[in-house]
Figure 1 (cartoon, rainbow, N blue to C red):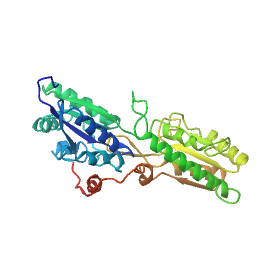
Figure 2 (cartoon, one colour):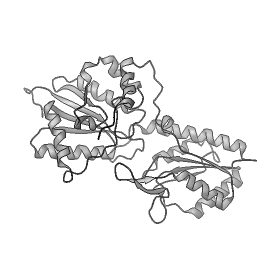
Figure 3 (spheres, rainbow, N blue to C red):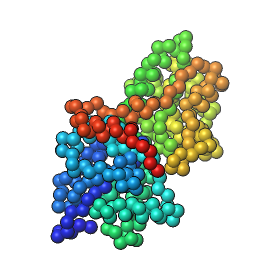
Figure 4 (cartoon, rainbow, N blue to C red):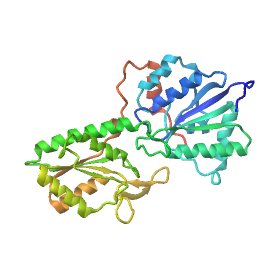
Length: 333
């Protein structure tokens, strides 16, 4: 820890996991705040492609950027420094990887570690803190919340949720109007699949589309509530009879009575989580088979669900180059 007579130590910042519409605002906040306390924090290094930037010692010295460029991060889409889905194993399984991080931190006199991500990133902060203590290397690790799912423990509202909530609500409203206008002779059921493995916040946000009783969505399926096919079909049938159509919002993490994901594909992702294969077509096919109703289903694509908030002013060319070049960087493991 820095004391009154100790020189300022540098900081390391990295982005992790799927980016949100506002992740660069968090980066902006970290860098600008650090600059306000030059006696405590020296340079802020950003890791290119997340934590991989630390492991490969591929660091971006943000102190070389003028304040104008840093402020432009607030209106820059995607992850300006590059993100990654790279899960560090436990200390027992791969202690050398954590020791490598400490080596790089020591080489650049990094005393602060800011990791901008979800639950796994918070766990990484904890593990690095434990290792730094055991190695006698003073390091303050801070988790910077980021997730659209709004499911981080001890976090009232995760940055990223608001923009996604607005997007799915508007999408549901527009799709509901489309289906309602065609329901007499065509599509009667619309299914919108949204993110949310265990938390139904985004699914609930679909409900913001309804201005009055009968508006889309008429049915919401949450991961916290066991899926009952018979009750679901009865509700869809009732809605179609009463309103002429039915719009459904469903979480990707919908589970059946056995506790398994309805859309589980049998594969796992980079973090060891069950890979979900798409619950919307499963639900839609159920409607077709049992109720013989025509349907449409949709999954918000990444270009829209995570699009950036419209800028209030033009983004600086330098900040835009940061965003562009991330897609041209070679993969590193």
